[in-house]
Length: 131
Image (cartoon, rainbow, N blue to C red; front, top):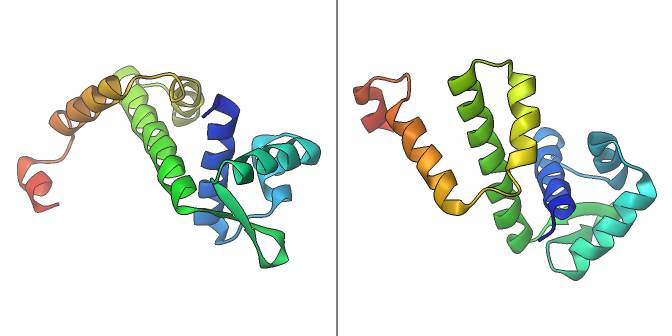
């Protein structure tokens, strides 16, 4: 998976969560790219089995696409929270940096960050065990 493909999958997932549906124009607006760029990317994602088009030309993640998009978005949220917590920078700055890092970070580093976040959570240990 290429970085821009990951960006498209993450955008589709986020739009789906926000709106319940996804159109090409929504993806273009979210990512700040042209509709022809979205069209090309959607063709590649469809070819590779990440998305399909439903009635009304709505974009729908396949099972493979959903798993991949959730992984990408999960890294994004984790890295945003981590950067915000350790640096104290504003959310938008942490999110912007997380977006750049999420594509190149190794899985074992992500797992280490997740462990650190779990161990250094602001929740009490009782609240942690109740989850």
